[in-house]
Length: 105
Image (cartoon, rainbow, N blue to C red; front, top):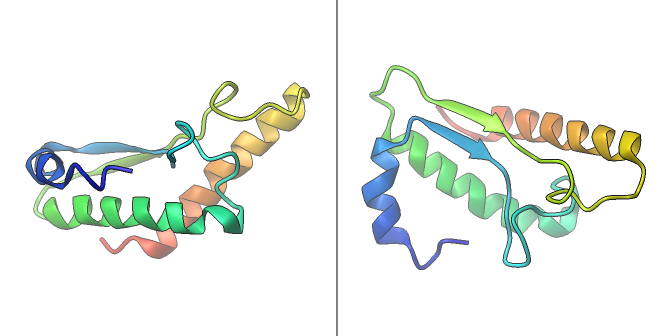
């Protein structure tokens, strides 16, 4: 969750021009479903970091974000490939809308 890496982040974030907006957590590289209420606090921690990144780079001409909720093994598989693909797609769309509503550029 990077709370012990604030000094490194302060040094690195001004150099970053692109981020992958995947929400990791202490149990793994990606929360099982970013849309679930139980992960909202974790999403908020990431949002704060991404907003900090934007604030540090407002003078740059272009910053980009990729919503990146990946397939299995990042996504906990249901055993049904079509269902997993749709769930992955929906999480990426949800994150796109969430970032559009909550990040201040």
